[in-house]
Length: 62
Image 1 (tube, helix red, strand yellow):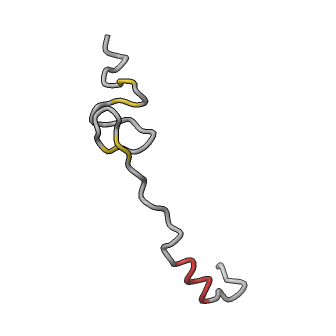
Image 2 (image 1 turned 90 degrees about the vertical axis):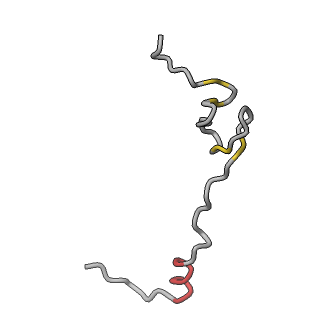
């Protein structure tokens, strides 16, 4: 069974429990083509474009 080697101080315990260090929600950016909000460096789900390229048509459809 794991046993702590030494006492954890109140300051160290409270520092670990605080929510200051936790990650923030990802930022949203506007799509330059349609103006919808999207995650940065991701495909826009409304107009299916990324970096000026259209990905609405799949390569498998011939």
